[in-house]
Length: 145
Image 1 (tube, rainbow, N blue to C red):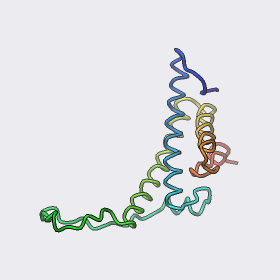
Image 2: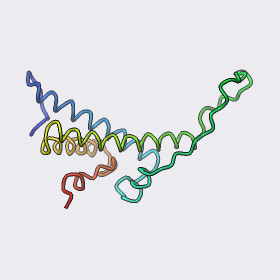
Image 3: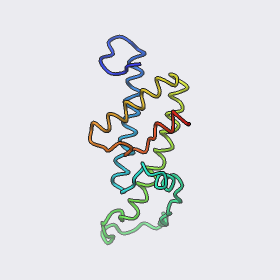
Image 4: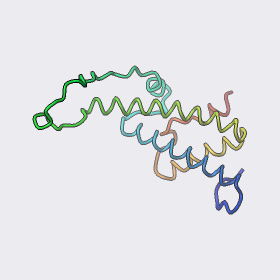
């Protein structure tokens, strides 16, 4: 079921194209986060670790006390805190993509969903990401044998 090319007036093809664009954008963000964090999502152990993280909670300052902004250092977010946020985002996006893939199967059928997700993954490879950088093991998802 081709989703590439020009839509013209075909609303079904346009809908499939938008689904493919969404799948690609989601997978690209996942791949970028994995690269930034140095996580190999193609490795089952690392993928499991990302999916089962216990986020380190950073203490929230007391909101009743208004700090003097002139005296406060402007260092921004610490590296550890930023990485923690990135890991939480990565985990959330991986879970979201699984739900999106399941909804695609329900909305357009197994074959069309597979084509959309495979096309999104192929586009990532064309953009320079290594195969599996986004953690989408489509063989496991679509061929559970």
